[in-house]
Image (tube, rainbow, N blue to C red; front, side, top):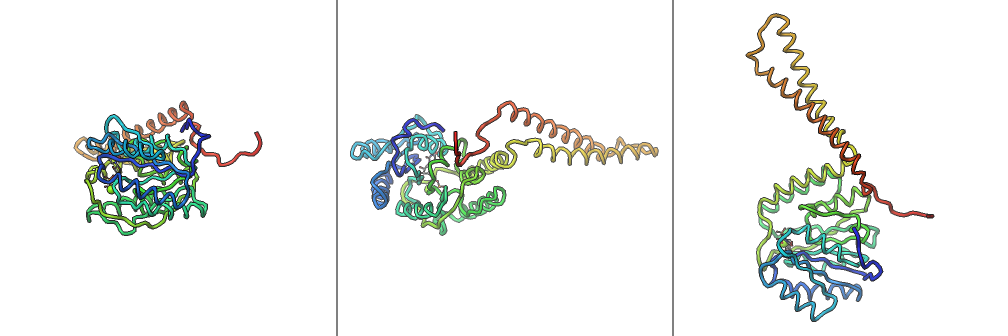
Length: 317
Ligand code: UDP
Ligand code: MG
């Protein structure tokens, strides 16, 4: 990710994605400022208005006028939280970058707790909403989501979707966000070799406005999990994934069809056997999967992404 003002660094950047949060912004700004001032005077607060239709941007305009620590970016329409974070990250000049939700559910007062954990040598620290103040169903769904994600990605944290996180600048520079991939930043960072940690944080119920994600978030989250598994486990070897699946399916199909052939040779009719259809189906599916894998290999080969590894240090030129 390119950053155009690399030499104008500040110590901390706070990035805040927001969508129709006019009632929270003023208080959020005050509390974040107090919290940051306890750490350093060198900071910036970047609000990204994700196409709000209420007065959010007018509030931000005011804050920017009063205080030059405040930057505000406004999308032309609602592009989603990942896009908002991505733009905020591009704009951020901080050595450490902190994200926080705009709805005051995460406490700005917890920022120093995250920073302290970073000092122990972590590259990314995620908040863990230990006692979630959300509706029951959301809590259960979230438990399941976090368990599955942790299991498949091997990242040992409890709460992937906490809005409150802090990052060393290098992590952000390696990150490409789209869709709803923001949920998997810790997984992607971990796969790239960064050290990921978590701290317990307090959580508040939403006071103003309402949640911007409906129940469709779980379905989308699931698709994104598939993407992340594919990207982190099999990025360079799609044939290993599709090939294994394809081989199992076609072997099963082959076995069934050999059995069918044997029956036919022993003089029995097999045209009335549903098993015959299954055998043919498995064989065709299996072969298709193998070809998918080969196509994947071709795509990987011809795109030759140089981003598939990350270098920590280099001595000598
Ligand atoms: N948000 C956003 N764009 C969207 C949806 C949400 O920028 O399309 C922001 C929202 O304003 C809030 C944060 O993302 O600051 C988290 O959203 P929300 O509180 O609705 O999620 P929940 O707490 O229900 O997970
Ligand atoms: Mg919220």
